[in-house]
Image (cartoon, rainbow, N blue to C red; front, side, top):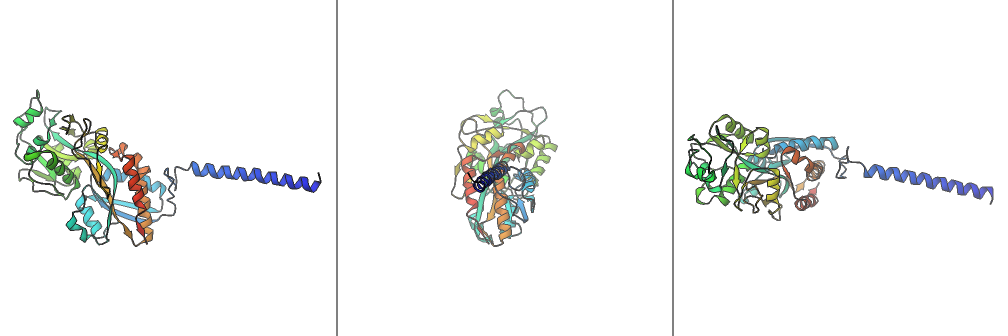
Length: 364
């Protein structure tokens, strides 16, 4: 073999070795990148920028705050803010284009759709959680309540803790004659909407106040702002009872009632019981769904959905792409933040539908 031929073969062999090494390094880098600007989902957030302002549901606020912190680690050029204020405020702010995204636990009424200046609104389910029925009653640490009894309490028909209806739900429990103080939301609230919707579905004739972000509560009741406000009022008042999202109730160290579900079981609020309710939820074409009054022995009957809502058409390409990245994070890496923050993550099938919906957004 000639020296020239031998040199050529040696050079080719060395080139192949270096090429293999480079390929292996590149492959390793791509496959193992679960932090930084790529994220565990494989989505590249490095090109995103801008500020995304949101407001609305206090029910989802703890999850949002945890997700915002996580998102800031991977999308370092995007600032996400969330002001809370209640689902009603979030929907109003999005309608008036004050914010780029809103949190809500209730859907937009058909007669209000025309007020949304940006056009078609998309619903993105993010997490779910129980709405607790939290109470403060000296000497009593465990209470179980049926839907009809709940309806009587919150409509003002049952006014004492030793009422015969409460006693029938709690055989063997010594109940005091303490007056019941019902605490409810003062602001337009998706938590109110979901709670009163449950009573409409399950409480029968004992509940006649209807459902909505606000209802006409009896004058004997006490109003408080946001889930934290209701939690504080319940904690400060002997004899009080109120509806509070699970995350806030846990953080406030409130005592919860077990609620009788459709199968006849009294179930305490928990993430497992919320997940059991999600298993039978029927999902609508727009990805809204109902987990209230779910069937199944282990299902907690007041399990609430919550959504991030955005406009489908985004005229500002920078903001639109940042929104897509934020939604993608909530539905991928963000799902790992649900349970640690006292929320139930989405079922895989619903999560995938929500991810696919991101691609229907029209950017620029």
